[in-house]
Image (cartoon, rainbow, N blue to C red; front, side, top):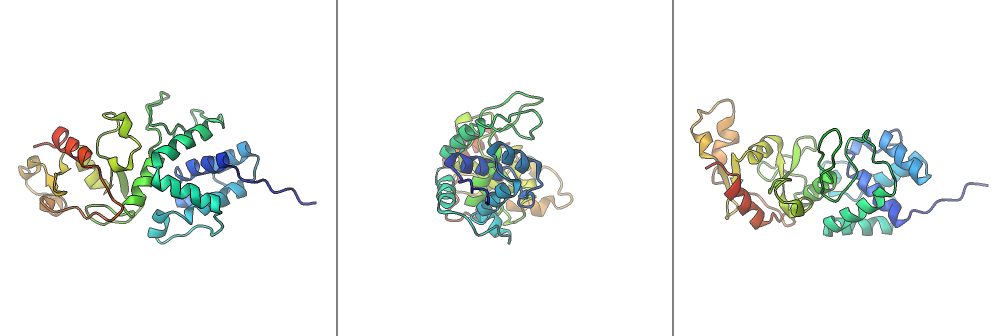
Length: 252
C-alpha cells in the first residue's frame, strides 16, 4: 500500500516560505542542504519540500520578471499565504519567525540566523535577521527593477534600507523603508553620496562635483542630479524615511 500523503499545515507553509526567501531560484532543488534539513525536520522527502518551494516561485513576480517560472501546483492555501505576505510582510515575517523557531535548528552553521523579528543576533558576528524576507517584499514592489536605472538582474540588485538597519529597529522589515537599487547606486546611497529629495528627485552630493570625472563617474552619477525617480504603481517609499536620509545621511 502506498504511504499516506502527509498534508501541509499552516506551520509547514510558513517554514517553507521562510526558506524560499533565503534561497535563489537555482537553489530550489532536493539536493540543496537547507532543503534536506527542513525536509528532515518536517518528516517529508526533500523532493516534497523542493516542490513546495517551486510552487512559491510560480507565484513570485520577481521570478516571473526575470523570465523564469516555478511549478504550477500551488494550492489555494499557498496562494493565500503569498498574497498575505505581499500585503502584510511584517506580520507574516513574525509568523515565519514563530514557525521557524519550532524547528530548533538555529545552529551557528547556518548562513543566516533564522529569526525574522528584525533583531540582531550575536554569534560569530552580528547578522541582519529577516533580510531575506525584507528583500523579497522590496523586489516585488519595485518589479525587480533598479529604481534609478531600470536594471533587472537578481545578482546586481539590492534591497537598500532608506533609514539604516541600526538607526530604526521598528522600520527594519518595512518594505516602505526600502529602495531597489543596483550595486553602485546602493553604495552611493548608503554612503550619503546620493539621496532623494521631497520631490522624488535624485540628488548627488556636491562632494562628487569637486572630483574630476573619471571612468564613467559622470554618466553614472553626476548626470543623475535632478532626475526624477521612476516609481511604479506598487512602489511606495515612505517620504518620512526619505526625508530622514536626506537630512541625516546626505553629504551636502
